[in-house]
Length: 217
Image 1 (cartoon, helix red, strand yellow):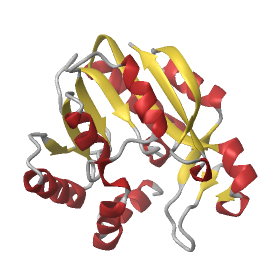
Image 2: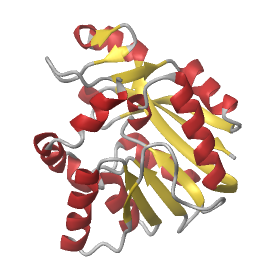
Image 3: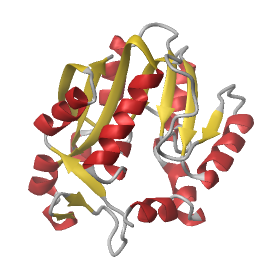
Image 4: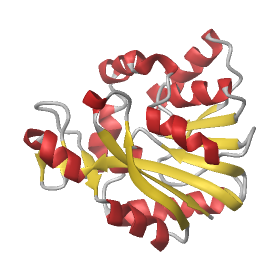
């Protein structure tokens, strides 16, 4: 089963340890830009929190963040980092499918770092976005990102096989890629009203772009 590739990757000590070097808590350019839509002090659920690059940055900006991840190893490490740096952020393991929260628990949900592309298959993504809708308050916001197929096929064709992006040479893990219309359709079919869906700069021009979609329950 392809989803086992993701489980094994993020439960490997070497792969998870390398995540500690990523950006040191800095938000990407497009992430900074999207914050203008978030209510001040919003209660945010960070899905696929990893080692808390986004969660730590959002906490510093005054948001109330809860981070979840489906890797037990990631959760163990991120809890240690939170304590080490004195962040009061709950980090919770979940099974990758069902969110362990009551209905209408959050005003914002983020699925950043292109995590949606690690949820292989249309049914998985559709069911998961509907589960997110369940725990969002009425009028709440969902922001998710994915790899831009058109950009990758132009700039990194050697890493693209079909609609899969393989950023690590000779490794089985891949990210599914998207077109803008596909992201919009995903959101609409899960019952959201799309506010915008656009390309966003990661940081510097050399880092390229990703697609991100913002929608409302």
